[in-house]
Length: 104
Image 1: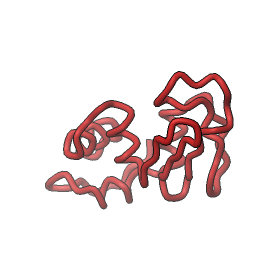
Image 2: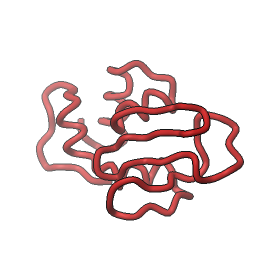
Image 3: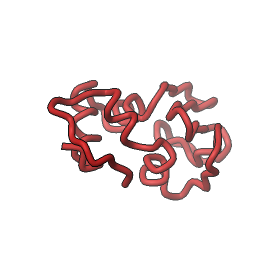
């Protein structure tokens, strides 16, 4: 898990997005996906619906964006992915990411 040496005084979305590499994050969350180090990647089976055909779910390992072309799930970063995957509100997703990645 990728972290910086400094710790935030409060939960800050920019700090979290700058501290957690989308590539590392998606390697952790989508452990079966074969991710490259650049741009959009096949994310394997979509975690948001009963997917049985790989190829429709993609993640961007640079920006953290994700998109499923089958069910329409989409978001702009790892915070949005965490919110959607775990059914969390924004602040809850920040807390989970900060805890999971040792940022607090």
